[in-house]
Length: 216
Image 1 (spheres, rainbow, N blue to C red):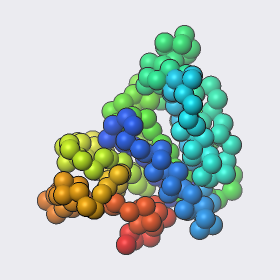
Image 2 (tube, rainbow, N blue to C red):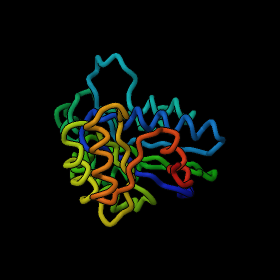
Image 3 (cartoon, helix red, strand yellow):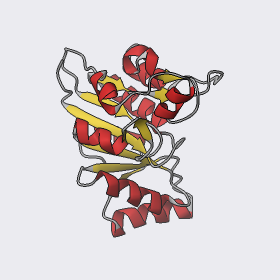
Image 4 (cartoon, helix red, strand yellow):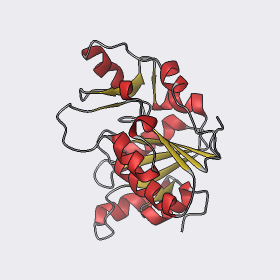
């Protein structure tokens, strides 16, 4: 097993911010470019009757992997809670961070981009004793991708998210950005000019950045 040449840890500023959709879009683009990819979702949770595809299914469709390779079947909890809470509610063993990291296996063949998607926000528990920030400390990713909304509250949520991952390099993606929306434009300008953050709003540019190329 070899560590990917470029390891990206993905977090959202909150739940339902669109990080899985963004992951599917970016990974599909990188797959079309011929890059070797591997996506991992250490744990996921959703209601048993949720009609939509799971996060792991979305990522697997983009990379061409099996869903259970992206997220082990026993780490898919059928209650919409943070994974350790969901496991407890279902009467299942609650995983520790070490359990989840131990199950995070990369292919033997070389991988250009390894994509690890977390749950909820940066401080949402993914295991009994850890969250996305703790997972980043263990995995030591080359880059953290922070997916955020573009509307009200964006500046606050982005600043808080970037701060907890410091000093790791963080790229911010403003999902659902509308160039015709004055607030969206102002949030983007504030984050770039006043906070000096690397903020991207275009999926093609984000794909370039995740592949290790300068974002255009």
